Length: 475
Image 1 (cartoon, rainbow, N blue to C red):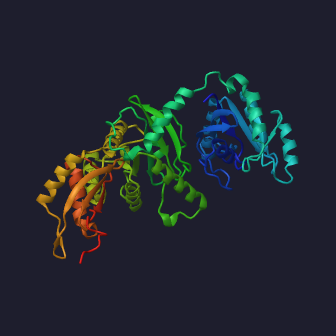
Image 2 (cartoon, helix red, strand yellow):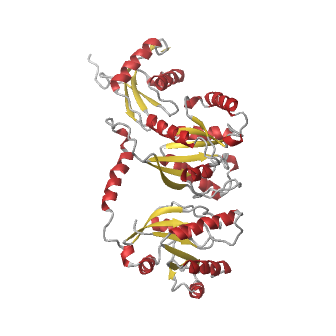
């Protein structure tokens, strides 16, 4: 991308709506409630012929540095300092407020390029608010409607004028990089390819961090990054959007998604929290590996177990992280107890990797990353058909399928149909009659004999074709 633009303004002026308009997707949560956005959210924007990086920010408010609003303001100010240009959004329908005046003064003091944007200009009675915006001393306001897409051509021209033609249209387009990314995106859909190559240690890895509210998800990601990139604090439920950040670990690009804390479904009543949870679920489906954060001081709450079960049902590779380990007394005895409970309470994920960590001190983060990579290797694993059929012959000889209604079930042939997660197809007689206990026996055998701990394993059963079906009987 040629340059970076930050969208700033007081709460509820339409910053996230404009962000979604520019990136062409509904990435940021939008609601009538002021202060929905709290973290910085980056995205790749397209505006007519312009391509740039856009950053959605929290609404700026006057607040003390120790308050939640104060920490949100600090995050926004960091985004302004990092950006090449700021889009200062005001509400033409509502008019200017003292907060708008204060923010305009702050932007003037910084001396960086600013484009003044008068949003909601399509509304009746917005003319007065539009002309009031001239008094901010930031030049001519650009009237737009982020919701309806009006005024985007004028916004494009104002950005080009503020940033300069050379920055807006660099001579060398980044075509080579684009061409590199396209095959990689196609690869994500290539699960069905039987001839998948060896595990690629350099391929970017997508990781979602999930858990209950206040388990320490954002603190953990900040520790990985080595900076206060995400908003944290003692308040539960600070994170609302699923925010992605990128960093390198041993030369490999890691894209991590911080998500909103997920409470019991019965407690989620407000529309905004429902949107946040839905956003977290999308992040889980998009990720390859999911790290489920447990609060080590109160582990294995019912909601924790439901989150693990959700991730496994979605087919993700999962790793458990017991956070706040620095608060645990007698760590070794406590760890042994946690391992016993993990095996007992999560039988559907036998062998799942569990790592004690501390996002506050950084303890265990290297081991956690290694567990993430190891689990991803298992999730991508493929086994040859020849090995599978030798294994199937051995396990059915050792423990044959039970007879149903006096007729023996026969498992004939087995192959792996996909990876991510590993899925297998077994051709057999009367698949609907195969008991669930025998399916578990096969699943546990696959997990143990082919070293596939902690990932979902799917086994599908298919009836063999009857060569005489459909033929007319001779008399």
